[in-house]
Image (cartoon, rainbow, N blue to C red; front, side, top):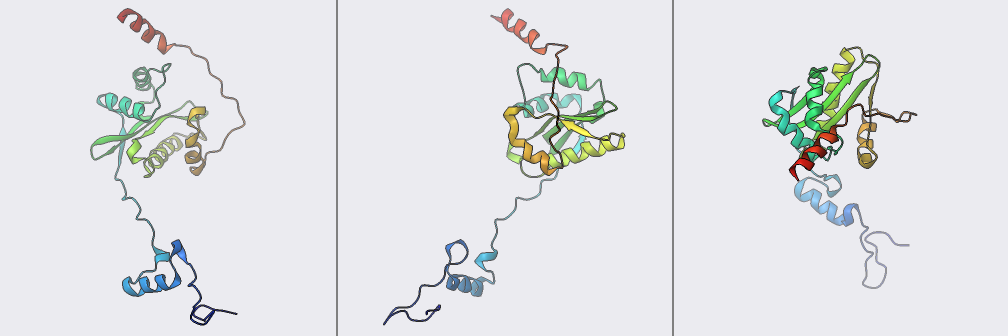
Length: 201
């Protein structure tokens, strides 16, 4: 039988047991003695908190919000973002929110309530600031406003090409409903753009 520190042969000692992150127990003890901390307790430093001010969208925000949506990959050829903004400003514009960080728009979200369900669209957070809680805060404010309007349930749709955000919404308490999402275009936003491109050619 051997134990740490006992000899295993004429001039041989047992190898120290490995501990956290490949360090030996002797290394950990030495580190604790020298710095007052154990390697086992070291953790990566969390990113500093981001201060964000949430407010209602203003007309002069349009360019910056569309650029944010583009950086977040939310734009599609069949949706004209500036038309979507113009439509939203005619219907419950108070539910179109932006989040400012250091005076710059770093987040945005559209919401609405038609008396039966609340809906959330176009949630975007500046890519370099994602994972810092900004999206959660935007959703919390939207939910607060919808709840105060008497909304009993919030719904949203996730594109099949954007399934990476499913975990984000699940962590906020959203679950997958047993439904088939269907839609019908009443106005084709992409027709005007095709016509403009044809004229330009």
